[in-house]
Length: 307
Ligand code: SF4
Image 1 (cartoon, rainbow, N blue to C red):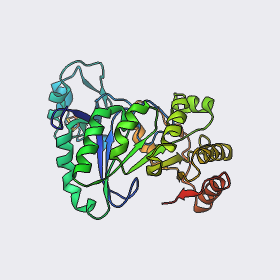
Image 2 (tube, rainbow, N blue to C red):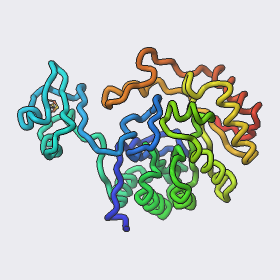
Image 3 (spheres, rainbow, N blue to C red):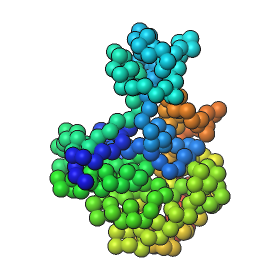
Image 4 (cartoon, protein in one colour):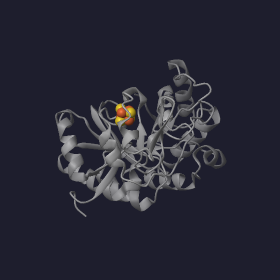
């Protein structure tokens, strides 16, 4: 395996991010996730498959796509309908679109191609920024991720990954030497509730948190809980998580992420339904954030990370 042969499936590269690590960062989103949280902020990253999508805002309704491949593309009034069962060459159809309204929802890149892309932002990395690998679940593309992290460290870049930890410990161990910060989600403490809302058990996640917080790399780890109204942002859940992780490592770093109401806008481009499609809550106020942060502190957290 080398940097010019192994490919990753990437669904987005976001520049100039100031979250998810130190300084100004480039976030690389790897496609595919073993969880399917009903509130997922990046629903286009759950399915590992690369598929065509249609962005109505960019469409000029020239019908070049449907004229070229009527078996693949049809219309329901002003709505373009994609026939996902179509077995022909989608790239040929997508080439016909003059505006990129019809496009793939992800692409393949070698590590070398990715590093070339990231070099465009290198100037920021010299001032404390770096690259953050997110998803989806970046660790399910472990061969690509490991090589990309090694290549980043060889250039002296700060590195971070965001993971939900529902992967084998052997995969996590492979990347630990090459990450400066590992953001690990711990969403729901109760296993029954976890299964109900993410569709996987949290047993492996808890096991991996145990390994991480007793390892020589424990100070690189920041455990995070995204505050999702009703689902994760409850007194009991925050208290249980805070008690659990601070018992394993009393100096554990813990961060509570405010609810992001903007995720709903991504769902029309997927075949998924957002958990708050009927009534989208607003983000928590400063006072409400303080309430949750105090809960964590009262439950044993000494190192609360605040943005
Ligand atoms: S080719 Fe592109 S712009 Fe033209 S109708 Fe199809 S999606 Fe819209």
